[in-house]
Length: 475
Image 1 (cartoon, rainbow, N blue to C red):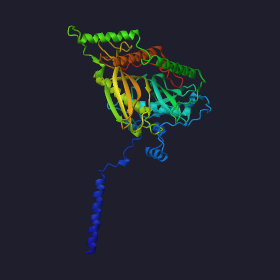
Image 2: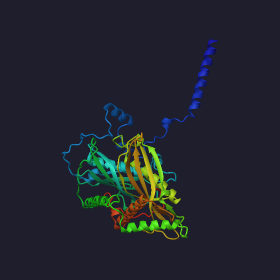
Image 3: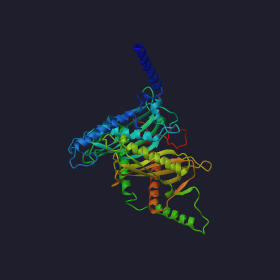
């Protein structure tokens, strides 16, 4: 009987093993699932940005009893340190994103329609600007994004390909700020150089260096100019710097609207009176919408996966992605069509966004103009409109005890519709005037050529103006 019992026991073990093997064939083995090695930013850039696991950063904060987000009266950066001028080329950095070679990497960069998700590219651009900034300043200071001067589509992407992101510091005089110029281009093969028609996008970031403890601006090394091309880039950066300083003195917080703007405001106000006058047959056209009806809002808690290299603040690229995608939705809701991105116009980062805080965003259609007025193609048979979306952002702590503005972001889209926005209140008229000024400045910089040349990299001038009508795989 014992041998029979033993045989039965062995048989039961064999049956159990067979069932286990069969069941395992239907179990998804997570450890062999393709790893998503990015938080929306290309892995190589993420590794340069985030160097400490979040749990370790929290543990260090608790052990030391110091809150890195708070200011201290004791500076960490010596005020008398010697700042040696540095070559532009020393800060140059280049990254190739192999989208055409890696379908799983491409998966992180595609949107629902199969186009390149521009918000993800914007995250990469800001991450790259941080890498470039620290190559120039070193690790002894904290460097943050202060402004994005402009992101422009030069030539739309017609096919999926590997992308080359490259840039360098092009303006720094020894103060706390620097201008970083970056371009996105089709990655050349076989060591060839990037051609003008392969430059997809150009942009310029203004970065500011702060003392890690006091959070006050500190001086950084100036750039050393060695070539005529570097002098051209430096002069353009200096011109941009002086223009921004002059513009700050003539903003609507400092000066009232000029005579032309006042006349336009008065004319719109009179027109609205006519719309509501029962004795006047004039009525608001169906393609004109009041500004108050165009707003979209969002709120979200800030998670540590999108922190910057100092661990307790959100990095600027995530704010660019989030604001861009809200602006895209606002333009689509306003026009009832699929908008085409044209540019990120001068935008500012006013205050940092702490990890764990709540970010509030509000999108408003701030200004519209016919595409023909902006010198895009258009006509009665193919009406189109440039739509400028303004994103106002603010941050609150989780207890909602304090509120700070964090920045203003301005995006311009092209929509295939004849449509316009009309302000009603004084605040809305000021938003409209501010956006109109911005549109005129951008148009003037493009017509004058400076918008095409300011952010060229590697000695080649950018070129071409995209009207948004080409077949593209970027959105």
